[in-house]
Amino acid sequence: MRLSGLFLGVLLVATSAFGQCKAKVVGTEIDEKFGSVKVLTQYTLNGQAVDVDAMPCNNCIAVSGRYDEAQGTIPEIIALNESDRDSHCKNLIARNLSITKTQEIKDAKLTEKKKQNQALKKELDKIVNDERTVIEVVEVYKGIEIRRNANGTVTISDIAP
Image (cartoon, rainbow, N blue to C red; front, side):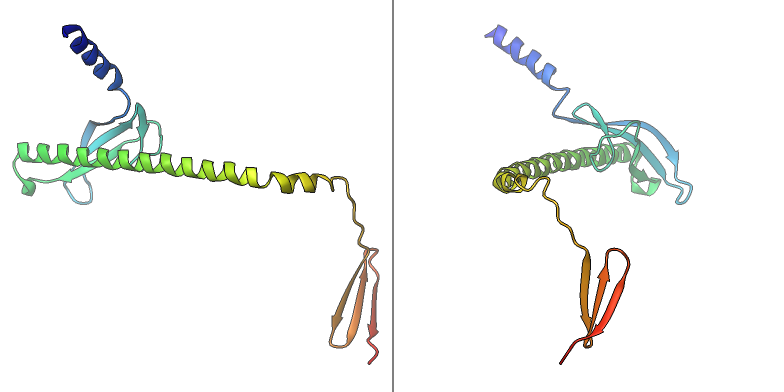
């Protein structure tokens, strides 16, 4: 029993690197426009740095929140930032799942479409090297026939009533 508990603990530690979102505070700065404090955060999803839309990126930094003294005491503001980072991580996980599922659906549709078009491709393969020659374009406009030839000549004639 003790061995199975140890195995489960090792398994949980070993699998915790993936299937998760991490939100690491990497700095703070004063917002020049509003005077509030911006908390700069780097998000990783399943071990890959991501931007706020769950798209992979390198060294991207997001603002996890803007805070000022009117929002509470320092411990309350820290707790608010932790909550904000948790919420954003949950959103990233949901977006990632949506992106993954959407791609899976697109891939499945593409595979099916390729299967459906195999017969058409087989028939169109039969006309490979087929050559068509067009030497003249004929247009009719207000009772006049206009013939344009590939060699650059044009013939205009009245259409008989």
